[in-house]
Image (cartoon, rainbow, N blue to C red):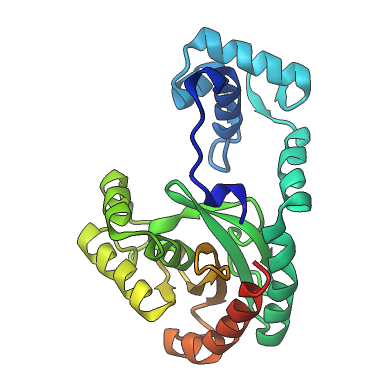
Length: 259
């Protein structure tokens, strides 16, 4: 099991706050805000402007951040951090062959993700020539509440943790289909737990339909989720389940023996 699946607490004296803040500065940049001013970084991280300046300048000196004299942005060297995970972690290496097999069989896009706070983080993906969403690539983050991967991952949590997670969320309507009522979302998560899979119909993006199953290890712990994504114009929800669920369940069983 990867370290992200295990709760871990250290002594306060062993915690390096500076490292935490430096990583927070890197995480402040995203697809919506790829270029930030010093003040914007401070606002996004909760740092003072002076502290944000020091971290940004240090990261610039180390080659992880670029500065054009006015705005800061991440430099290509940041890819080394993600590349280290992709090359060394067991989960992507185990899932990749099954993803490609699944995509080849179904001729549909497929991805695997893990729960990271409020989001699902994609750790592996293949399009099979079907470009249905820009989110289907390693490293992308999507909200857990409106994605099939997110719902099966949340369904694996004890109910008290699901309730605590929901209490912390602000649910935005990303499309006209997005479930934003917490009680209804609670029901959808419970349904995913009961069925062993989840379907989401155009809640993240218009036209995007997704079917997901949990990936469990031999102990029965859910460590990730695996999905198939299709365009709504080509396949109905019923067809998605009938055509793709058997192949997903087969991949689920094969991966379980390796986790």
